[in-house]
Figure 1 (cartoon, protein in one colour):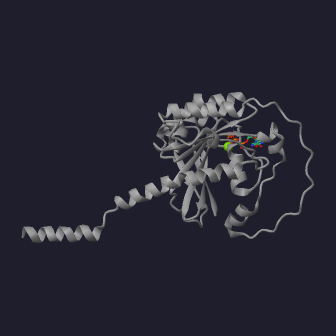
Figure 2 (figure 1 turned 90 degrees about the vertical axis):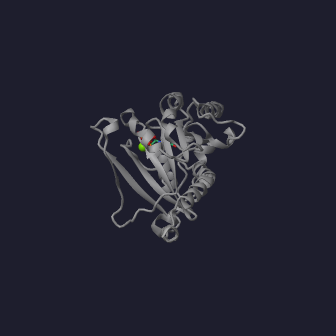
Figure 3 (figure 1 turned 45 degrees about the vertical axis):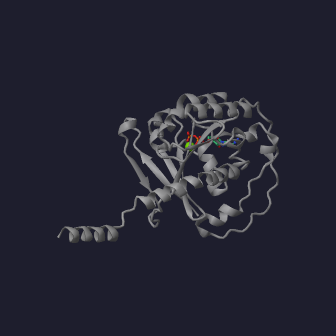
Length: 274
Ligand SMILES: Nc1nc2c(ncn2[C@@H]2O[C@H](COP(=O)(O)OP(=O)(O)OP(=O)(O)O)[C@@H](O)[C@H]2O)c(=O)[nH]1
Ligand SMILES: [Mg+2]
């Protein structure tokens, strides 16, 4: 089950004064998220498209994100919120607010645009200072369909999430004729460049490479257009944030005050003193 919530901000105010309002479907009582994943990156790299692909199994027209939105994904018994953010400079100040307490951050670039990788380090990495201390990082090169014939030919499976959306039963679509492959563009960012950035992210966070998830596992090339590696990205992260969820739940249990017990102990104390 996936529910989408929008976050509305007033762009006319300065970043630190902006009012943030969350809107949600009237009929939906918000479930409490167990954990938060945030997707960051420059404008136009395809953050919203990746989320549409994962949650709606579609590649559809987007408009540049204003403020942010989050999706609530039920993963087994847990609720995972996935936050989409705006890449536009104008909304930069909101990024660290969205990252507060995040268990995982997806740093997204466009494989055909070197600058979009550089921006991750220059502009977005510092926004993650507010994330959880054990935050996991994934580096994602999107638009792989433009440079890689495998990604261009991939077709995303649709069954699982289609069936999940509002519990609506869907019929498989009739097979479409395969569109002609478009000519491939030059790849500007190699997987090695992304893996080197992952190493620098770990150093920035003061994390040991030896004890952190390896770069090969945490660097993905995806296509929101064809669905290439999109499920793999989100589901790898969901599995990896489970320990954070369990830790949070344990901490929640330990900090719960048992009112009956405390009333009882008060009475005993009072009885003692009497
Ligand atoms: N070929 C190709 N185009 C893509 C892909 N993902 C996104 N796009 C296109 O890239 C443009 C930007 O996509 P968005 O998802 O809106 O980008 P964004 O990162 O959310 O941008 P902001 O909201 O402005 O930060 C759109 O025209 C998309 O259709 C992809 O995997 N392949
Ligand atoms: Mg967007």
